[in-house]
Amino acid sequence: MRALLRSTVWAMLMVVIGATTARGQTTPPGSPALDVFRIFLRDGRVLSSYGEFAQVDTDLVFVVAQGQKGGVQTHDLITVPVAVVNMERTTAYASALRMSEYAALRGEREYQALIADITRAIAALEASDDKDRRLGIAIVARRRLLAWPADHFGYRAAELRQIVSIIDDVILDLQAATGTSQFSIDLVASVASAPPVPLMTAPTPAETVAMALIAASATDVGIEKLALLRSANRVAESLADADAGLRSEVARRLNEETGLDAAYRALLREALTRADAAVRQGRPMVIRRLILDVESGDATLGHRRPRDVAATLRTLWSESGLAVDQQLAFERWALVKGQLRAYEARVRSAHRAWTRHASTLSAIKGGEPASPGKLDAAARSFGELDRVLVSLRPPDELVEANGIFRSAVQLVQHGLLLGQRLAVAPNAELSRNASSAITGADLLHNAGVRSLALALKARRVR
Image (spheres, rainbow, N blue to C red):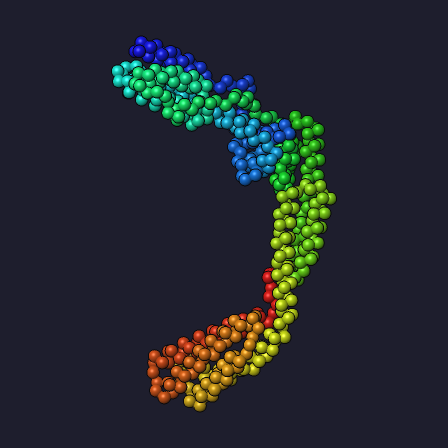
């Protein structure tokens, strides 16, 4: 058994030694651009992404770089629907690029450190006479080898898979020696390696412009499309060796999109401006017609701004709901305006008590004595006002205002009652309480006046 184990271990060591002398992924001629990711469209066209891309819901967001260092260089954020992207190829290329970048920076160094650790583990395994310890060392080494590629961008996964297969044989021998029958299920996972993906060299400045044109046709965000084409035009004009046809195509596309952008802006801005007026006027049918106008105008322009149009239509439908609310508010006001005005006229005459007895109320609020005659007259006036307010049956719009007025009158009555007591026997605490009551009554009365003024007008949703 020991001889068999030794021969197996040495065979594994040979694989390890072979793996350490081999290099990782073969670098294709021309040196790939490790900072240029690729976006593969479903129609076969390819875009370049400066740095990593990000998927946000149903969109892929990335940066399109154009031009060259030392000359005109631009970077534009672009959004492309995931539906037009071959995500399998795109993510596979990104994984291969990350692995290549990792290999170039520190992959081989960290791989060699792993191999050194595994070699030491093998030596410890061979030197030990404890069967259980040897089995434990082999299992730990296998687990580490299995986990390493996933945590290191798949680097050297094929070589590690060969090592794992030899360790599996060692573990089987050790299991037989210890009486263990099989692996636990978490130990039999295979070490998979992604199929090789050829990496592309950096695009030439002219190619960056050509790919920007493709990106402009793939995005459905109007403002991004126009910004990308403006950048492409700047870069193309700066390239001495750019093909005349490329410059011409960029200029043509830019002019076309500029015209489209102006047309869409006019269409959508006018619709929203008219919708705002329709909301204020309570005319929902006007907005329904505007929705049809936007849909018709979009069709005439070739459905070239789907996101902008969709956002505008959502806003218009929301405006339509507000216009309905305003229409109902106008109709309600027309129904009750007679009652509102009758209430206002009835209360206006009764509320003259506030003006007629202003000096008496001011004296109480200021802590000054008031004559008993004036106090009694004010008490009678506000008592009559309270009876009027109780007898009124205001419409729903004025229930709040009527309640505020009643509270104000009751506070005045309380202040007057305290004032009458003060006229008989001055008291500092009663004087403060009376002043507070009149002050609070004034505040409530003013609030009621404002509430009444609002209720006398049709409710406005905007």
